[in-house]
Length: 238
Image 1 (cartoon, rainbow, N blue to C red):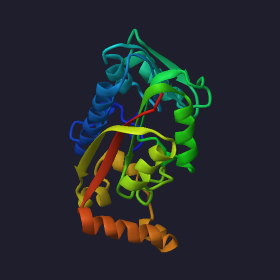
Image 2: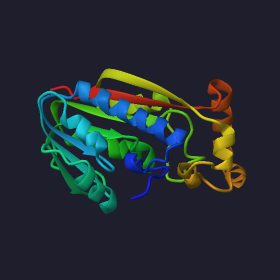
Image 3: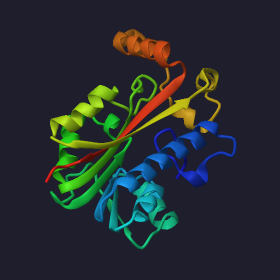
């Protein structure tokens, strides 16, 4: 399968694809962060993509099995052929409804919540799959992304993201903040293959969604040309 804005395939990254390689390193850092906080037992890697991160999680101390779930047959085929591991199994499924409630000691779902219409419902569903005392690790962009990325449905701030965990009674264990600077010229000119997926007709989008334009302007004034991300490890009391 081909590398794209929404699906990183390490073997398919272009040699000079700076944004893709930087994004891959950010993803790997998140997975390593998650692995440091996992408890011994069974782990769900939801929206695992092509599976390179599931292998990182499988190497965490005490992890007996990682179940990588994704709704893309193509991505799972790549995972099963290119990122095999004796403690990793793959399941085709959309969301977490297929998974048994209270069935996992750890759940990892990175850069997933921004894709769903009602993140609070999705997050609640993840918590239901977690055993008491288990660890949930999730990440989102905390600068606007819905305007530029047509696959995203929800913009987050750090406050709104952390509120999801408070709403489910989770305790924050640790946080990872990441910054990715970008060249506006490279984005506007779509020089790299991954940027081909960016929203077309952005000016018209802003006219139809003035709130998105204000959020983008505010982020540029505060952070400049950079995307920011937050990964949180929570623990379910019990």
